[in-house]
Image (cartoon, rainbow over all chains, first blue to last red; front, side, top):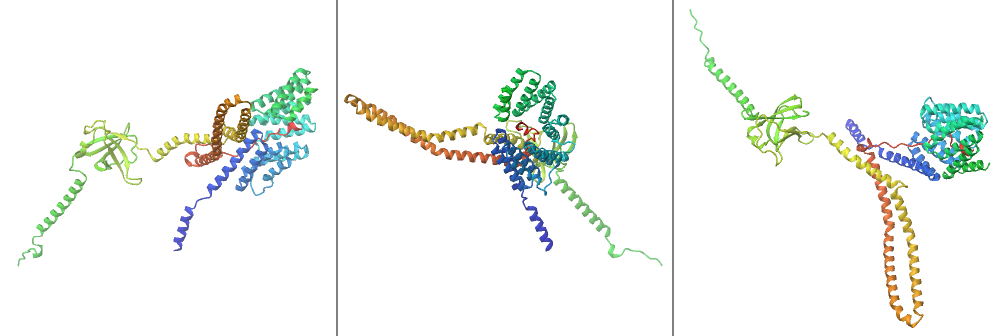
Length: 276
Length: 302
């Protein structure tokens, strides 16, 4: 009789429906919110993007999906940083760093640490940025996707404190790492930094060479903000070489690009350089 | 003293009895063999025909051959040849007249788990109706398996579902022509009530102006009613059009809601379809996307 009950119980257990459909629906909803967030970012609707990523983060947290939590936390921090809401950007990264019960991959931890470094860099907290970059490098293994970005942030930190040679070394490492991994955006960033370090060393020809390569990649990638930065630096390189008219042409191009992209900071810098 | 051995009385005639017993047993055995042979069709005349099949899976020697469900023969032999396998059939000659040359054979099964048999399909009405003869070949129709049929269905359904998915994505995309048209329509609908009100005011103003003009002079007064009547008719017509437009506009919100529900339903349908085993292998799985962690995120601001 007891055996019969056990068999019946096993049969009933076999008939039981796993709670797969609900999980799949929640995952689908999180993916949909993530996709919407990306669309809003591409259209420049940052507040809507933040709302979508926050929803995606919440749904991912409800499922304890570590990778999705990290992805949406990083996305939310990027959007909040672009909005100038640094405290919110940091808070979103807390979904990864303050969550001890979930296992995040080293790559995700490196990305999150790098995002912290970028936030500190944006707020000119150079010591904090240095700490976070060191942490990010600690999480980064040999084939780390953010390896080149880490070198580029190190180069920017060195430039901030006037250590041009150190910046050039870091930018060169970023250049090699990004070439090896095929990371085109970071390759352009490394070339731009090499151009800027050459400018600081008053080597106009070398700077122009690096910056033209960076500009070509940025135009391929369709990154208007970086195109404007390349054009401004190219103008400075031309001015350094004594070519004032060429420099003004670069500044005018930078102004046109930044105005079209509604990038007020770059437009203001271009106007200031044109007024000189 | 001599002893004459004589057989005991009880063994007398034993030879005859043994012979009778053996004869009866032999006759019984021969009858049984004959019955089995009869049942197996040994005493019936058979006509041998054959067909070629690419694969003999499920075809065995001795398998029944049926015509309209009636047993008309058996599979005599299955042998490997260049074209695959040659299956020889022995058809009861009584039924051979019912098997025209255009007949086709196919492997069937009584239900999903029943016994398999070779089914003969008499040829199509326009085909050769003369009976098949000894040693002739008939065509074999290869039966599609369950997996093949499902694969075929899946191949046919996949483009349709992809189209559906594309249409749903187009409807869901805020930048699509459909969504733009719906938005433009909504804006137009929202603008129409004020326009109708303005038109009514214009009608009233015109009417007042006409009444004022009617008082200008006697000569004008005589001609004006006709003109006023025409204007009035035009205005009535405009008023009627306006009322009809109001009705149409009254239905517009319902239409908009219906469109929204249609979009949602289509999205749900597409999502459900994407999760089915039939399609999910063909659709690239969606994954959580991360914005690029750009080392120059804040460079221009400093």
